[in-house]
Amino acid sequence: MPSIVLIDGKVIPKLGFGVFQVPESATEAAVMSALEVGYRSIDTAAAYSNETEVGTAVRKSGLPRDEVYLTTKLWNADQGYDSTLRAFDASMERLGLDYLDLYLIHWPVAAADRYLDTFRAFQALKSQGRVGSIGVSNFKVEHLERVIGETGETPVLNQIELHPNLVQAQLRAFHAEHGIATEAWSPLGQGTVLKDPVIARIAQEAERTPAQVVIRWHIQLGNIVIPKSVTPSRIQENFDVFSFELTPDQMREITALDSGTRTGPHPDTFTVGLDV
Ligand code: NAD
Image (cartoon, rainbow, N blue to C red; front, top):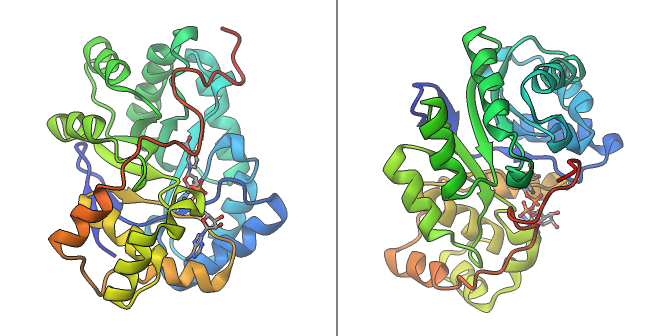
């Protein structure tokens, strides 16, 4: 599995498995299926209500803990220094783990102005050795600049909505300048981009499926990518993206599908869980 070295020296797999909207009852089977196929990175969040089942699947897989990369996220309602420390303990209890690879602030909720204190709590967790790496999600350039300026530490990664209809050129350029890894959420646009005729044509040319083409486009752009599926055949299909390459022209054509269209909420207005 190809990987990326983060600015703190830790290593993250380029391809992971996301479990947003996977019901509790289906999570253990989906994660087991992903681990059997070869995925070694799982992305969950306190807000997904399936941390317990993710932890169970990882333990039942029998894989050594250090062979599975686990990410979870701090929910908006828990932002703030002390509440972050408490929320971390609760997540670890649900996961049944004593060490987390990557902890992310799920959303900035800038209007509540608590993400700096939250990140300072992340720094404490990292210095205690309970978390390997600390990063953010859905942060814009202004939020990243503030974290870097005020805490003296650069988040290792920003997990953002990113797919062929939302290419995020400006944010990716800022990340590149600061050594922040870009992780793409809803990398398939929740399935919407798979119907695009350009993707369909390139899939035919490459003798691959539309999902494989889009995941491959992410990998070649340098993104970390975490597609979701609960269907074992699709979980397998989405993993099989390292034995072919898109041409520079195919890459350009897919990137040109950018229309600035989101499938999820906008970071400026998403404040669920926090009174602002
Ligand atoms: P996605 O872009 O991965 O799309 C998933 C959907 O695409 C599936 O439900 C299915 O309908 C379809 N699909 C998947 N594989 C397919 C295949 N091979 N062929 C045809 N259709 C296929 O969407 P997502 O789940 O929103 O995003 C992936 C992960 O990103 C999440 O599970 C979660 O871990 C993360 N995420 C993070 C945030 C955040 O705010 N940080 C928000 C949303 C998602």
